[in-house]
Image 1 (cartoon, helix red, strand yellow):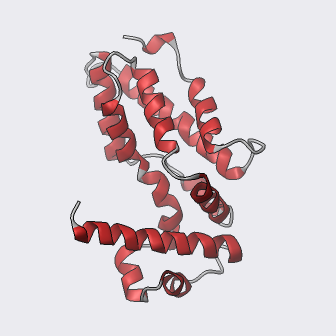
Image 2 (image 1 turned 180 degrees about the vertical axis):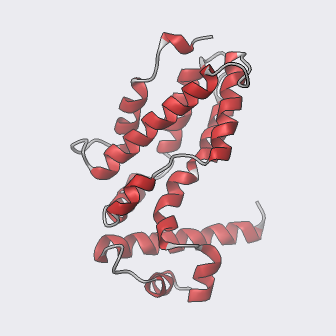
Length: 194
């Protein structure tokens, strides 16, 4: 990774950290982009070079997971069944943030309940890549066999349900990993074995 890319990511992380703190304290609607920029120690113009909208500050951590899930799936043992490998990749990705960061994100997200319906674990491009990887693992052609695509869609829907359950706090204090793992367990089945 180039120095410029590392700096860009660092600035973006500072913006998100500042935004999460402000959202949690004052509420999503009450916080302005100028306040976020000031709290991050940058100018408003720098803020807008790194952030399209306040919504994206809350939604991007979930969206960015797709590339990570695909990379983690590629690293799983080749003899592991497709459902187990995909579930493990999703759960590993769900534990990449420290507990304190996750709680800060969740507290910020709770001030913007209108965004809960927009939580999508993965972009269409990353979903397609996962279907390709799962099809390879299953030794099937995803163009003629719907099973790889079905498995990916079911697993991602289950994971999204787990994320929403955790974000809403409806799992009575359960961690993100527990919520995601429980949702994924409902999809694991002998049907997916090679």
